[in-house]
Image (tube, rainbow, N blue to C red; front, side, top):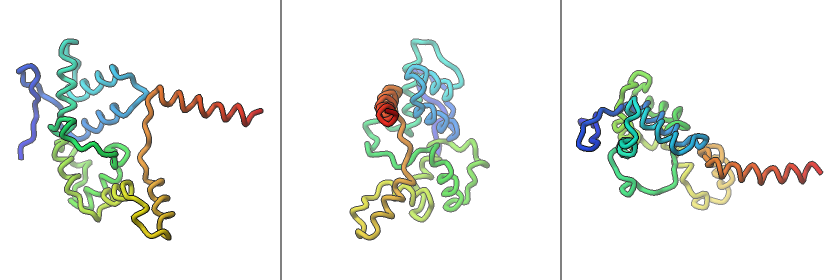
Length: 186
């Protein structure tokens, strides 16, 4: 199968970085809420193309980078369900699963195309660690006998994805928690 190496921006063929490590760097920036939206957009464009285009082209470059990172699908085509995996947070599970299912050491294939990487994740068996972790994250403890629920809740908590708050949300949380410090300090 041939994977895209270029994107089309205003009828011009533009080279885009296609390896999975570049994509994972983008997702790390996208999920970093300590960076402002504009800076985040510029960082993604720079990571994906290696340069910042003229201001009148930035939105077009960003749009095509987003489409590439969604494996060619629009946001509407993607399922809108709660995340059960994070490429960067789950890196150790991804690496172990690729080794167990495909006998692929990802460190030896740093140029693997991101779309191929995603296809391989989709094809992982139920027996690999990543699939088991994702299953625990999405399971409903009420589907299990009552005697097992406590262990299911503990496993879900231990394997939960980190929550990324915006600067504003974190400020409100900090303000709320500070109230408890004041109450406890009196």
